[in-house]
Image (tube, rainbow over all chains, first blue to last red; front, side):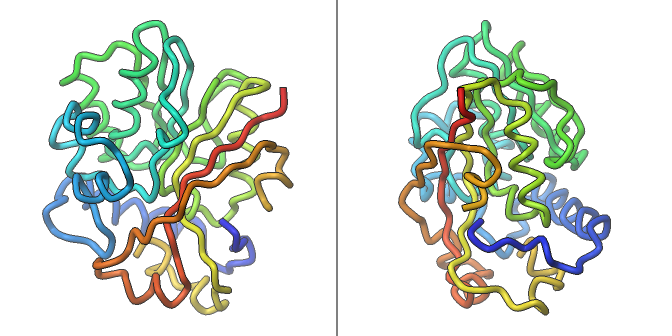
Length: 204
Length: 45
């Protein structure tokens, strides 16, 4: 996030298609092995307590591919409204839904159908009534202005060429005083232009 | 920082985690010194 990649000459529709295909595989075949860690070992590496992740259905946990832990800055509170930007297969959505309880709500947004389907399966298996899974992009969230207490996200902003647009959108959907708790990556060295234009490097 | 330029305040970062260590992506990640991190920030009240 320290390196702005908005100058990339990459075709954004092509990039979205590539990322969607890659993460469809993560959702449906997590056992294949990818260029990044996934599943329970990754969640433990990122500081998720075992007791917390083991309440989540195995299928949702197995496809987890985050880069941080939105709950490191504290649990969410009962009754809070949450937006999960790029919910993936739903690990953070399912944890958040338990923390905010029946009086709270989680809107889980993802552009990839297989990810949304897996999240919905987890919601159904856990019999959660406070989650709504929606199709959408991080840059144009299908969420009302000023409606969220918290925006969470995990490993998604780095996949978006226009990071400023993503942060503006998070700001738009938050209530005044609301907060973001997002996991992502920091790139400490300047990324050369040819690498910025290499679609394969964007999603590992 | 981009978050503050966008209008967020109270930005706090967690310790960084070498999330690509041991993965197939490790060499690319090392080339650009890429680390996982968690960020907190607030919309002004």
